Image (cartoon, rainbow, N blue to C red; front, side, top):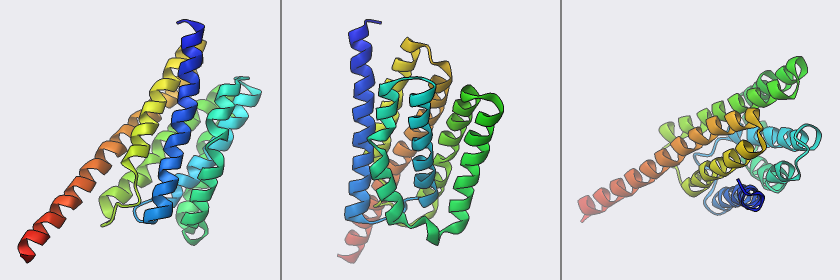
Length: 206
């Protein structure tokens, strides 16, 4: 692929990731935290720190570093609002998952193992958000736009990783991007279902 095109794709991925995080932060700030998983966002933040380290010391890619560095302050802000210290079980599970899937494989097999484990964690961390979407009665805190952005961003990163032949992060990103797309579609369906229920109640009331 032409170098200029790859540069455009990579920085578009950085911008898309930042916009997705901004969208979720705004959603949480204005509509509340209902339906938003603190375990998911704690793990997001931990993994963001990993990607910054990976970009600096293994991939030697400024784009990879910025892809997480721009999002990190807002991720931390979201985590603070979700108060994970009040949900110790979920927080301990998130930190345990990060240790088991990212830190330990990295110590044993180096950066590639760490990236594959991170991809597994990024996919599994969508699980709590899926559970919240199914279990909670209020999904107003979940931004479907941010998850669609996340899936789109993953596609852009896949294009970049393919060009620079970074296969481990490509596979990791493909897995997590697919999970993001499932959450986005499910959240849209849930919001529409909620709207339809509200219309039925209004019709019944009249």
